[in-house]
Length: 242
Figure 1 (tube, helix red, strand yellow):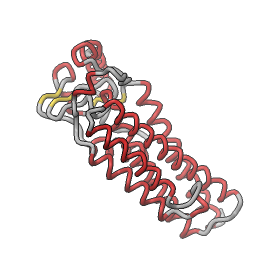
Figure 2 (figure 1 turned 45 degrees about the vertical axis):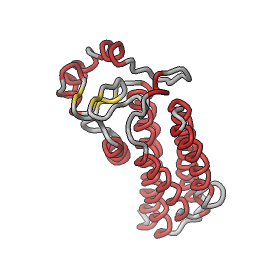
Figure 3 (figure 1 turned 30 degrees about the vertical axis):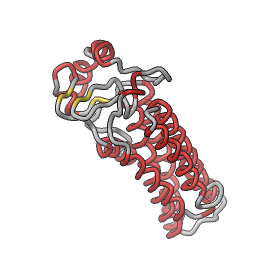
Figure 4 (figure 1 turned 180 degrees about the horizontal axis):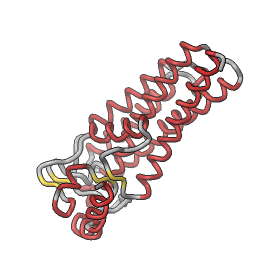
């Protein structure tokens, strides 16, 4: 059933690209500089929440001081907001991608440090459990931001009440004719759901992943999540003496 839905949807991808001009990149002279797209405030909150999580994560599992991620996130949010206010949506999108890259580096470094500290025997069970949970949550929010920023060419190219994409196919798109949904478009919660499923089930479950860049992002998120799970499993085995 999933394969039939994927086949039916992918057959319509060339017409989607032609009709909606859904390209992977957003050049400076793009029409996105004249289209406001969808609301940005959920992504702004997600960036601030990830920064707030790093205020709670132990220094031993983060690079730099605890406030570094939050401060750098805010530093990138300010010009993003200014660019959007000026109608420079392509530039605003680049600042969003830069913030995503910052968060990804922070989360990946924390996951690696979890493994390193475990190998060095410098962990306590309760502290490890708390920090691993915080890093796992930051991983979900970070990649929800990636999916939100990438799908359909970015938020400036998506339109409330109408959706078509060559990156993800949500269930609503799979049921719609030619994969074009009228009267519906994904919100940040939809991308958060995809990220949560990827971190827990290592699969997007009901959402089809169509583009190569989306597949690379899902593999990266799954790898980070798997690393956190491995650390917790290794600590549990060590604790009970198996």
